[in-house]
Amino acid sequence: MRTVELRILEYLKDNTELDSKIWEKAEKLLIEAGILKQGGLMQDVREIIKEKGRWEGEREGLKKGRQEGRQEGRQEGRQEVVLNMLKEKADIAFISKVTGLSEKEIKKLKNGS
Image (cartoon, rainbow, N blue to C red; front, side):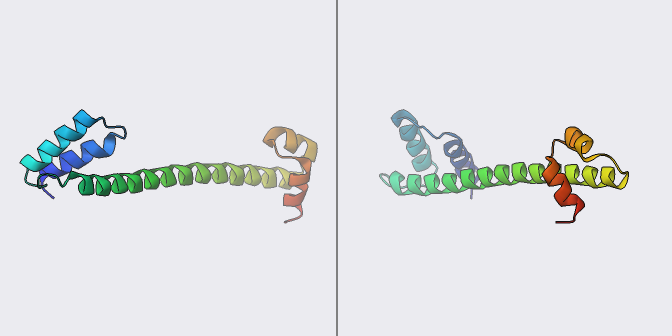
């Protein structure tokens, strides 16, 4: 893809709610760049919108995955602390208070479940 095409696609990708003047300007630029023929914008726009949807979906998926990973990491960290405290013979009520895990969860970890 040429630089002009990339700039135009990037602009369209970043602007979700484009008014008619912006579409007209985009169409004019695409025609001038030789990317479009007169009147062929709507098919290209549909493709750009589909691609933009894919980009947004991927971005949201990555964001959600990172959040879930952090949450799992925190949970694993708490569990490790619990196991270490149990090895040191700490009281289950105290471990619960320190870690925020319920006594039931702590007993479950203690029993290896």
